[in-house]
Length: 417
Ligand code: ADP
Image 1 (cartoon, helix red, strand yellow):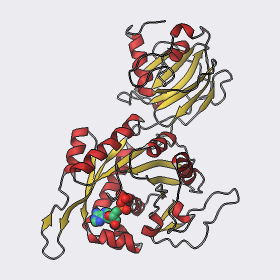
Image 2 (cartoon, rainbow, N blue to C red):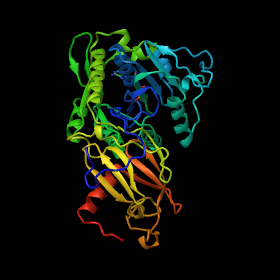
Image 3 (cartoon, helix red, strand yellow):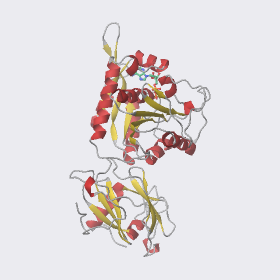
Image 4 (cartoon, rainbow, N blue to C red):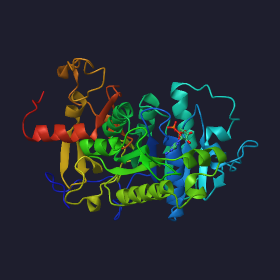
């Protein structure tokens, strides 16, 4: 496919014929999937553990990261006995213990459970990145991340810094819990992490004695929310005392009672996750730090990844068309040529645009005509950051912003300065 506009864009690296269908921040891991919830206590960790085991039971190679730094619960749920520091490779990476066929990493393996970790802000993100990147995972089809509850900075930074293939939102059927889950959903959407779907937990309770159903926390809220928001509904897990017992005893219900309604639902959710990621458009470019002048670290230009109906907000290539022009190829096959000075002027960071009012703070006339990028760096799944020759380096350009401003320019709706 030839980029529209220019005839042929000179690329600074050799395009690979068949792109990987996703980003791959940790070598050997095909998909990193976050399990998130707007608040604690909705059963997020229980879903993460049983989902990981359900994926493993269908033959996938699975790892599980307990990202709940403050209250790590996964070693206990998997019945992993912590009797000393974990083993490490000669280069200092943690060798994750294996249980029921899955590998697990948790802060709970590094310290005893009865001392709650006092870890704040940026350190949390650092620890989490370590639990993903500094662990000897080997080859994995799925790394499931049990995120800390909430939709704050920690979750946002993680979603930005790891190339997540998708996120699953766990909610209970109650209205308040659904409202909170909605916030989580929006957070992932802003950073272009696809929502794989919603899981409703603690749904209908079936009485083991009389067989009658009762909806202790309501019913159908998760499904209704997924319809309203246009994201898939992955399944409703019943309220079941065996789930609690399984978690407490270190034998999760998928292992302990594989024929129970709960275990069947977990496996169905795992199948839904697998088929949804198998066919979805996720990031095709590897993370990059690109030196504009020398071309070192340049991303690829993957014509072969484009297809009609491809996601118009996922780039399949970046290239330096000439000293003044950044070209972007999108998965739907469209390409844009962006003047680099225009990009500098378009910066929407807090130093260039007043956050509350949206009032421009940057005087376009103050930008030199020969301003140029120094480095262009990928940011998670959703943006690039450009460090400029004038020293400005705080601008993040989301793919959505790049695409929409290129279209506005093409339509002549943006004034040149
Ligand atoms: P979170 O990670 O959201 O804080 P947990 O996974 O730790 O929540 O679960 C909180 C409690 O709810 C645990 O005691 C767990 O066993 C229980 N639980 C989770 N899912 C269910 C369910 N479907 N039915 C009954 N109890 C459940």
